[in-house]
Amino acid sequence: MASTTEIIERIDDVLKQNRRIEWTYIFLTVVLFGTGISCFVVALITGQFAWSTPSAITTGLLYWPLKEIKDIRQKNIALATAPMLITQLPKAKAAEEIQKLLQTLYGGVK
Image (tube, rainbow, N blue to C red; front, side, top):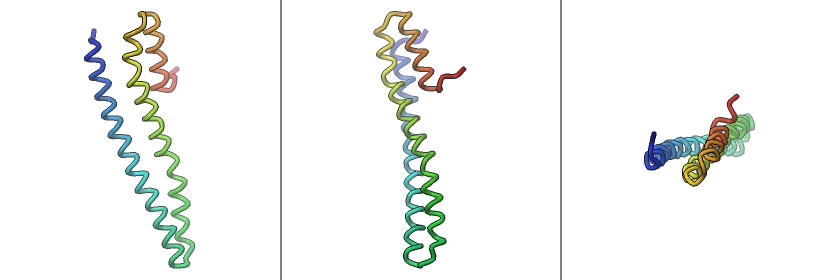
C-alpha cells in the first residue's frame, strides 16, 4: 500500500502534466483567436468580406478548447484537495470520497 507521501507525489505529477496540457490549450486558443481577428481585420481593410468567414468559423471553434481548459481545471482542483481530505476521514467515509473523486474525474463511468 502506498504511503501518503507517495500518493501526494503521484498527484503532483498528474497536476504538472495537466498544467502543461492546460497551457497547450491556452496557447492554441490564443492562436485560433488571433487567426480569427487577423481574418476579420483583412476583411475590413480589403473590403472583401469573404475574409470574415474564417473569423466566424474560428470564433465558433473556440468553444472546445475553452471547455477543455475548464474541465482540466476542475480535475486539478479535485486532485489537489482529495488526498488531504481523504486522509482525515474514517475508512468508510474515505472510500465514499474516493468514489466521488473518480466520478468527478471520469464523469460517472457506468
